Length: 401
Image (cartoon, rainbow, N blue to C red; front, side, top):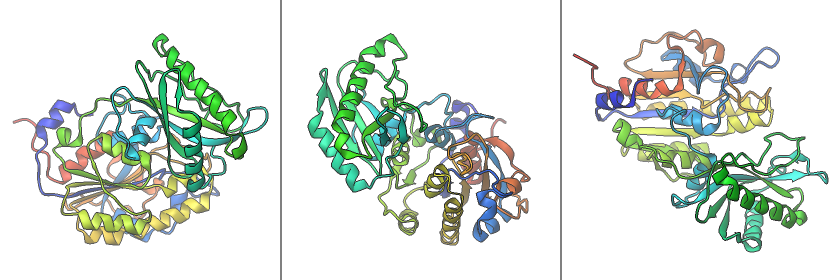
């Protein structure tokens, strides 16, 4: 990776427009001989790939399975090993919460446990968002404070929510209170430093009380918390890259991450068509756009191969409209792979295409894992994507004499 100070010294502002389309959980693994991308009909992406430079990217490093936060940070040009951002903070900022440096946040799921405390559904059947709001309001009224720490719970989509703990001396050196797998016993958090012991005890008491309180709400009869975090110090994309960036994303976590790196989060509707319209309406105002599509990741995590195929075919239909905007640089890739075969994020590299008038098209015939690995970009780190975009947007001057 280029050292920050060198990259900063090379960046120059220009009028060129950069668009990064992130198809969440893009990569897959073969099922009956084909990955989801190989099974999908994606004529627009295939046509675009044939006019682009293609390759594969590692979100973090060989063999490392990334969370959504680190993998997105890499795409935005930040070394994810240097800048660690907790999931709780991203979710909280994504739903518009104003946090102080003292606040401790956590991302939560409503979940189902059996009478032995074994998790049988980490998402409580993906309960409706309306039911989520009802339960969060109920919990807020029932449990407002523990050991002098104020507790607020905010609903998200379906089974997701955010908890904010407010008090003095709270620490975020805590393990996830979530085994991340069904069939295992629900657990509390553990402190990683002695200074975090009091915080862990408070969180575990909260979990105990919530589980007791939720008994009438089966299947959502417990909660799982992860991503305990506080607001970090991180430079904005404007400071690092002299960009005026904007984000188009519907899910809170991605909106929160965009906020942390200084993007303007644009208000948009829930549908893909509305997201494209938002991009069109604001295209003259910014010079970098992050455009996020979630459905592919959700289908992969559900283990639904055909649903992921359909999601890929849905996102494929937007590219003629994007190209009509005439972006100077267009990148299409994923933050990480989510093969439906694994029902989870994986370490496998993602295909990427880079389209601009300054690339040498390599004639890749399809936007798939196997075709893109033949492309001229080869396999490289995701943190190098943004410098490539800057170069193709003529936003980097020459290094050295």
